[in-house]
Amino acid sequence: MNAPERERYGPRARPLPYERGTDGPRVVLVGVDGSRTSMRAAAYAAGLARRQGATLVAVFVSSPTSYTAVLSDVVAGVVQQTHDDLTDDLRDECRRTAEELGLPVTFLSRRGDAYTELCRAADEQQADMVVVGSSEQAGHRLVGSVATRLVRAGRWPVVVVP
Image 1 (tube, rainbow, N blue to C red):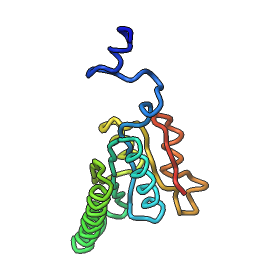
Image 2 (cartoon, rainbow, N blue to C red):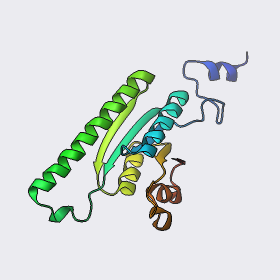
Image 3 (cartoon, one colour):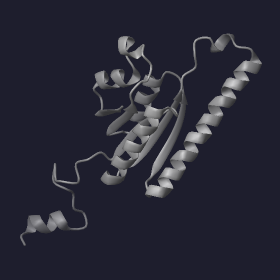
Image 4 (cartoon, rainbow, N blue to C red):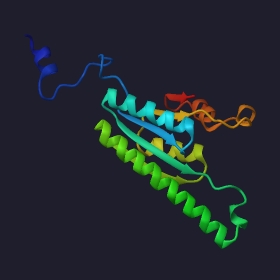
């Protein structure tokens, strides 16, 4: 065995560029909101992260509607409670999945525009890939969805799960 081979397989070995099994994503970020497509996207991302030995980051973004500012305190409290309950449910689901698969998972809860917050989270977590579910709203075919905007941004590989 010559010297370069010993260095390659030694304790400080680094894989060669594009060596099979080492060129996959290290951090997979998935957007979840409790919808059917987002839960399929989460399942896809969890499987991908498990196979690649990557970390999974699940991000829930609650987007306040434009009329939230004019709601009464009682209604605003109910909206906040609903957000908190959904966040807790999604966090528990992530925890269960992490335990079942033996997968490191980070759960983030954000408020704001879904596209902006997913981009910010992907940058903060240094995501190698973003996975989202396709939009189920008919109007998004004309106006554009979060998934379409992420693909057009071209900053990360994006997988849109139907």
